[in-house]
Image (cartoon, rainbow, N blue to C red; front, side):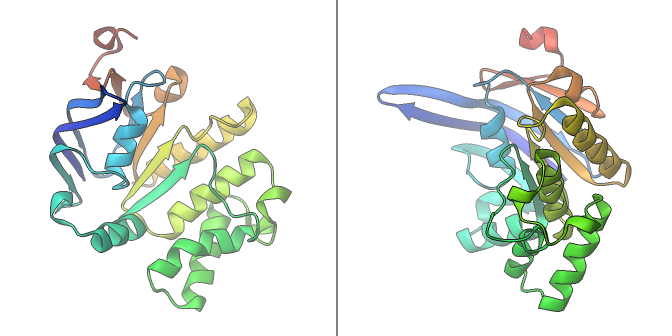
Length: 227
């Protein structure tokens, strides 16, 4: 499903080069649940941005669902993000001027779905995450855990091949965080491909496989990464 080979990404802070990704290779199989674990500044978010086609590597190969990302135009990358990737962010990224239902519908507009289909798919996704009775509520009327479930519903509604979750419990209390992780584990059991970014080792252990990141490099074991 996801094939990254020898990925490099360097940023410059003034004259100083920061090697955010340093020769990263990673394969994620269809329907696999992988956690990428590491401390702040390790390169986790940069890796997520590359996998989500939000950023391009300086060099290396990234193939998503059989598509070589290097061959894609900006328009094609936008379509890939809309149709193949469901994003779940730490900050929820919901529009408070819209209801939960409208927030979940929003990505489907870019898929050129009819209004009827958008509403049906958004309602089904919200029902799946246990928010059938909160569809008309705005984000400010929902708890943090409920907002994150709306974000997950938004990813589900798009029928994405891959769900990328970046610190999805980072802004939640322990109970809400546990509820969100239980939902993500349920989605994994339903054969979704999930990549979870986290600094929390206990959360990472819920995945089928853990990959460790430190200083822009990947390791198979936490001892190798010095974590």
